[in-house]
Amino acid sequence: MTFCIRCSAHTIQLSVFDGLITTNLKVILEKARKVVKKLRTPTVSNMLKKKFK
Image (cartoon, rainbow, N blue to C red; front, top):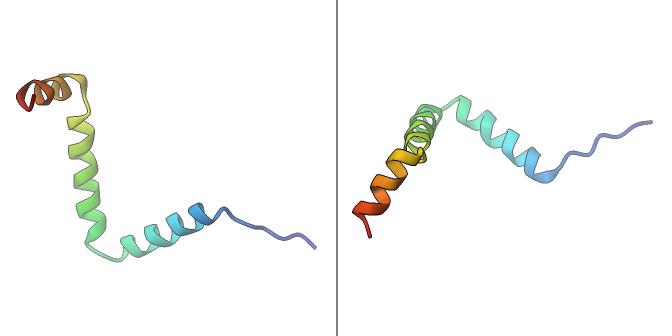
């Protein structure tokens, strides 16, 4: 008999992902990820650092 024991963090991640699929939060999180990805580029990051020193 074989048992599969998952990592608790992975289990929580899967549960949250399943919950997001059925809500509008998924769309909001996708947009937020795109914004963060853009802000983390070296060009934009340097501009923000200079502006908020």
